[in-house]
Image (cartoon, rainbow, N blue to C red):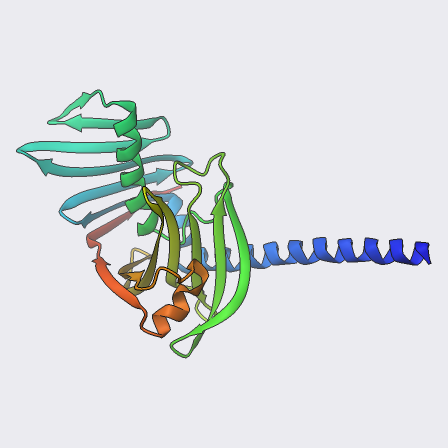
Length: 251
């Protein structure tokens, strides 16, 4: 009897591990297809520029090297913030200036956030990204894969504790909705985004977003889509990228 119990326990543990592995593979597969349908490897060999909220953003990615920038005017000064493989730099009126470490972290996070969202789902196959396939969900009569994204501390950036959920169209493998939680001074904030104005520029997919927050503080991150369907979210803003240009770099 004892041997049978041990055998059943071993089978149970093996089944759980196998199920977890299959779940991981399924989530990876959905994300990989979504990236492919949005432009795939072309993102890794491109120069992208766009305007967002009176600032100009540029991103160059090529063979593992990258430069992200943000340029804007403030009090008659031209300011450009850069992020590259070596870190953060700021230029004012054409000259590099020293920035306190505490402020450099904030500027870097701000620049990186805009570039991160601009090319989603590209980037979700990075090594620090963890994926879990949740139960499918229906929104506006369409079925979606629902994938939870978390990040490792190592390589996950300053906001590695943020949690994301992506709703990916089961037919077209496009990200249509996403939600995320982030740390605030007084707790955890949450947002829900609805993609619209899809366009492909030189083969790369870009969208704008309606940006929502929950009306009710009891709504959880995973339930934001249900709250959206039940009109329990408040529209905060629109995330719109203007004047997008894409130049592909030959490999």
